[in-house]
Image (tube, rainbow, N blue to C red; front, top):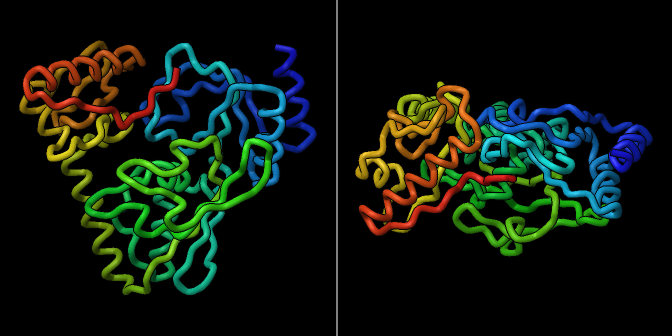
Length: 301
């Protein structure tokens, strides 16, 4: 514990907010997860840079989170430091059609900012319950749109606290993948290029897609969104439904009866409950269809 006490003293020295009693169930959309050894909340990129440098120099295990919308933490918690980027949420116009957004801002906030400035191209992201940094990290997408279509560049912080950026093809965007998937870099801000549009048209599209989400997705229950990646040539939800698994449950976790592509926390599920449902879906779908499902949700032990 001495090392963490020294780390907290360091946080005090740079005026970075921290907690030694943060339960991850309060910071993830699954509402599952035990206590982290430490959680920090930098509210400037300078604090973030200093913290990352200190953490790496002192050999701490760590990871960053935004809205926690694609994560499943173990019930035992996280042995290390969670860097929570929620306070890094500033958004600004660079020019008439270019937005620079810090990585902790929610996609909903970014979409509303784009709407307020009559910018179109982000409507597909309205309703995705994640942060901008997380969306850039995994190339989030829906309804025919992807972040790679609007992101110009990403600024990041290296393990030794330096600022750098990547743009264009350097981002190596693919299906639920970016260069950041394979590198130990923390996205600090994202620059996006949109197009001028008419506010009534933008709002109509945002409302339409949000209504589709509410109609088809189990938004009334905690979840991490789509549990599985889309297998080439198939839809995961359809395969799971065809395999007779709608409503299948382990403990408090269940394959949604509304959309089989979602595993939901319907009754105080544990992490192991969710993992049990996931493994049963993988096994059954493969036995019945020959298709191997891969999880989109990231499990963190």
